[in-house]
Image 1 (cartoon, rainbow, N blue to C red):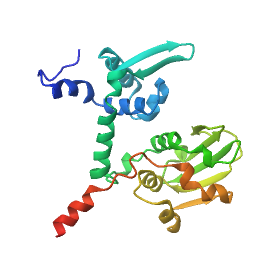
Image 2 (cartoon, rainbow, N blue to C red):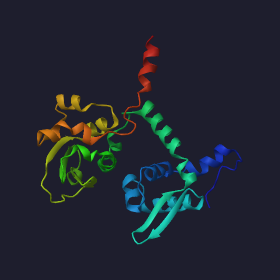
Image 3 (cartoon, one colour):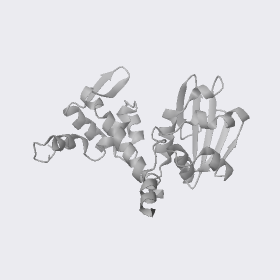
Length: 235
């Protein structure tokens, strides 16, 4: 049995559920639409599978998550009370983006997580009809994780860490930090292109619509609050 805070305070009772290590990230993935265990794990790749299984069981026990088993396997879904965490997750993300944006080290850059996030926000309507394959090559990433393929077909978008065998329509070469900054709204694609921090090789239409089909983080437009604080101190 988990050890609680030993208080009747509603903040304490809520924190007993929400403030467990990894739990907010698991809820974030469920809110993003991941329902299968492997997909949930792709969103929290540094979390052990045994810990993810434990957290899901704990969230099920308190009524935040419901587990459904059918012909397609086991799926996890948020209940009504679980979905009430949505504004808390969003506000937590906004706070982190306002006060800690770009404040991450190389050890916090994760190509798997970045590509998993990106594939969920891609706008396939900007791709030509049929299948489109985009290959990403990241500088500064170990050789085994340097190449990624994004495949869009009939509105479905998949991300592959292994060559799917399709002809590549667009090659994207950049640094992991650069694409992370573009994704988070800290660097514009145009500035990265001007500085040659990102290079595209492929048909003009795919290059021209790169920003549109790539998309950005839902928090990319959150303003950096630190700039206002520094300006106030300077005055």
